[in-house]
Length: 387
Length: 113
Image (cartoon, rainbow over all chains, first blue to last red; front, side, top):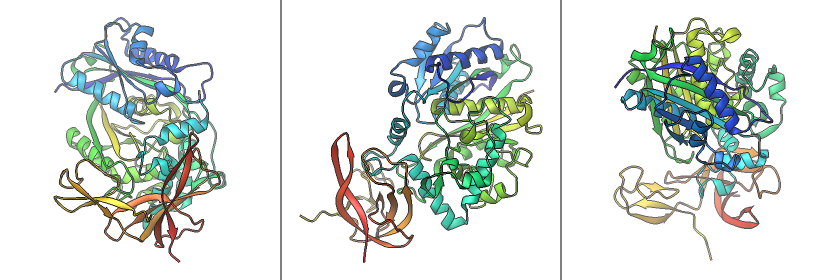
């Protein structure tokens, strides 16, 4: 396999983006990434577009074909990649494999979702269709309900309190305030979070991500050719991808995200690295409990101790292991198909030292965790500086 | 007619699963017999849902994961607003929700008095 580098990246602002449809967003992010790579004159071999619900939300299918037409990447082979909310990371993985195998030399990976075009109820229902049709969905199980069931298990077993969830939210809001691309640009206090409305006891509104529009994109080529484009190529050092049983109750232990454990182990093995080698992390905190659980199951903290790391400031922007400097899904926003790509974009900016006010101090390697369900499908990437 | 809450027992290794899989989660066996999971189960975790899905009339919708004596677990609606982890519940047949004007029936869990 060839070494693969990220040579350019870009994204749209995340948020309620009235007046811009899905194709506008995908085109904007893609063109920014192409510009960033200085690849405007080049011919692309492949295009992968991460997207979960274009058919349902935008009434548009075959969106990869539409994107190459819109921004003229013709005749690149183009396809949409769907893996629930990990569609973005799955698209990156496919792009990585295309370059690593030697099948493609220059690849665009984009991810996007236009979620505010329909009512909140409809989004909630569409996202709930990820659950098991007969054992979960018909009973009224939603993603916030699953997160609440997991949170209560964690509270019972490990002494996590509501205050810990609020602390994660406060941290991620503070980071987002330093990120011009983030959806929620407002400070959040412990008291404010803890007095927000209850959506799924013990989860309040502020322990969950908002509904956002947005897109993100990266350009990949072989590390060998990367120097033609940039002085600061970022190497994809490893990836991992694993699944688990669909229903929460049927997991070996419902408080363990086994797919996160397995995918992380795969990624570390491939990269020949260990958790201590990582300097910056982006997690899939669609619900704040998930940042805590993922940080443990990925191997950064002992099981049941992730909330203590939050308490001690370890995961803050100036801590030993900053988690979600971008603001995370919680405050940067979670346009589902864009999320996995946007996590990679943030890590590239962090590794290049281009993250502005939210710059983590001199990270050499970054780690991203993207969920394609509720912990039953996880895609991990490890990136490192290659200069 | 009495409805029984059933799962699927692998004929090769004996693992009991709910819901059904076409291949056993342990041994990949493909033949199963339907077995009753039990008349009573223990509550492992729960939530009271206030952001309701379609076809549920009154908040909160109380959902929980229960564990049957044989080890199989199930997710379902609880008929009590005052759930306690560790409480004993029994499966009862009833209306779950309305979906596109169709009434959906299934098992819920009711406290054992």
